Length: 139
Image (cartoon, rainbow, N blue to C red; front, side):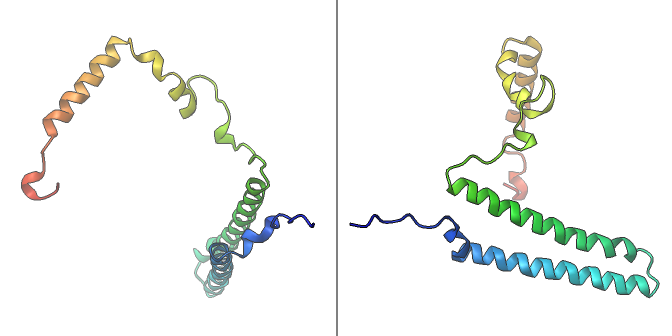
């Protein structure tokens, strides 16, 4: 008896959803290159501001291709059961820097009387404005 071979990993690339993404990528890439060419023609006719856009649109097109390629690479890694490489935002940051450390310290502030007073103040403000705006149909 032959064992059923698993479906190839690349098959997700030809699903309707991914075909839509590929088409969007091709149209976006072509559109950005066209916009760069358009800006080049405007710059050549004397519009000085268009020189910056002449180089900016092709750069956007390159960024789009890089993003698309990285998305496909990450999808391959996920489907093969591998881990997606940690991005800089996922790294542990020193205490006091960035959001992850603020979340880690959230439990330390429960006994702070100043913080408790501030939270009570916010709760009082919230209760005072409940129903505000009903008379003019905003809520």
